[in-house]
Length: 323
Image 1 (spheres, rainbow, N blue to C red):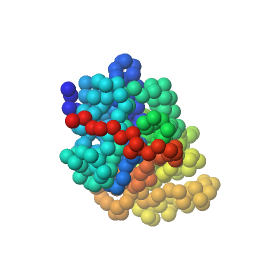
Image 2 (image 1 turned 180 degrees about the vertical axis):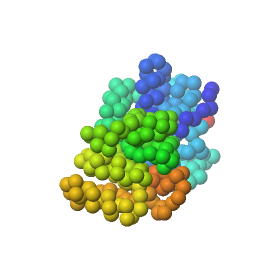
Image 3 (image 1 turned 90 degrees about the vertical axis):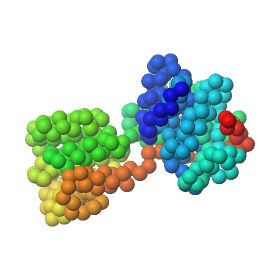
Image 4 (image 1 turned 135 degrees about the vertical axis):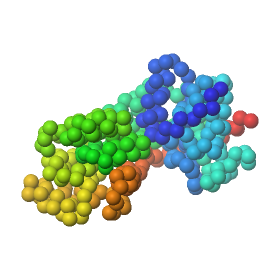
């Protein structure tokens, strides 16, 4: 049995793997956190998969009980039964504790509805929210979780900060799109970019930007003449975050230019400038870290739980752990 755990996090990534397994007619267990209390590593509704050979994609506990989750999942496959496992506070298994405290209940389903998973995957890939309902026990109570599309960031810029930010944003789980007037820069970030790169022929060569409410747009230029047309287009979209590199003086000049182009004051005020949580940095790598940290704050939640269905309590259907 493999003891590998692939630490992917976003529901879209977990469902990507589920679709690959479905295409290969390989069995797997869908793992979901359905109740938490106190300190836990992941949020309610977090997903993972365990394959028939014991590989785990995703995680629920940052490693401290994931190996036990894998063993339970394999037992579920063998017995063709769903299972609810209780860890931490109130659990009957004193030898399996959560070092961070709290409580976690994990639902293991060896036969999830594949059509439901396919539908959710298609919605997320189309950048639409998707819901999954987890029936617990006899079906009289369930947990409904709404998952949001994976956050994406469009970076327009050139040079060291542009390259460093693309790399770090990609490592941080964002889908990265790069836009630059320099082909060498777009080539350099191609490995970091999860989606597209585009070379700008002129500042106004892009007519529109495909930004939605799960998107961010950043300009990372030192020659700021490239920014106005791009920012003007970004401000016409519902994107969650718009930021621009530069000093405070540069930002005030930027706002004046955009106002002169007809941008409404309320739209111009959406721009975070200078972008980044830490001011006055001189290192490209540290500027990138500062910028991505601000993005992380803007995209701090990837899902939400909807009201529980009433009636039976989760504890009523608690199933024992595998020894």
